[in-house]
Image 1 (cartoon, helix red, strand yellow):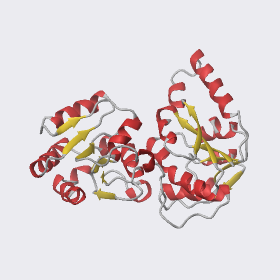
Image 2 (image 1 turned 45 degrees about the vertical axis):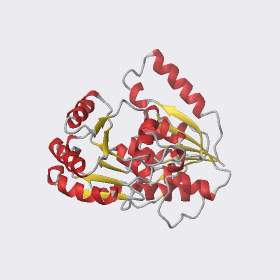
Image 3 (image 1 turned 120 degrees about the vertical axis):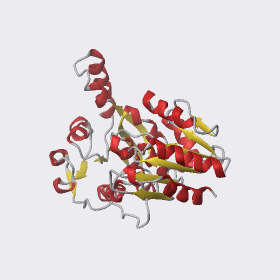
Length: 318
């Protein structure tokens, strides 16, 4: 069976689809997935063995210069690649008008998606041939698993979903004596106070020889990491990494502490022990899903203290 999946962004949303791919792969032995995904996240589908072809789309970049020659040429190439195959099913797991208009409607095959009551942007369901009522009041991963099961006609496994990518990194070295602090996120109200990060570093380095590794994605995040590295010589600012390189760092860590960001979901997908800090969002519906996931929630990030995080982290790295 040849299936086209539409899940373009963001990082956390892209990662949330992986357990559904694993379900489908186990239920349909000859399954082959082509995946339409934003170019910035095109590394992620490569990690799952059900994925045959990645079809990168660049809507975020194209909309900055929609009439340029480069955009027109890239759009033509994208459309040619998308329409090169006839699919047994096209599943829009994004549920947005832009994904439906720029991807789902163009793909060849019966189009599946959420119905108007189950979708963020009801107009998107206009482009689907088959529509499914899937309740909102459950985790996003479970909604997508249900969408796939109904679209492809198999019984949904009554077990926790398996991202199916941890094994991709099994050939790497075993877990080492370091932890990773994911300190960066896009929303200001999701940031944890820098002073609390510093206190947490002091507590860990006072009681263990664990190395603390700090990733970053832009110059502002790098500057924060460099300030935190001044607290102790065991704090290492990582170089600029690709997603695959960063996934290897996370996969081999003893544990991770993270704010609410896409990399927290990547950590969960790797089945890595992870403490995620929530002050601006409710983790019940979109929190890190999977094995070894721990939450610390408060009414705001200012109310989460380093003592709480250290107590939980100490149990994970003993």
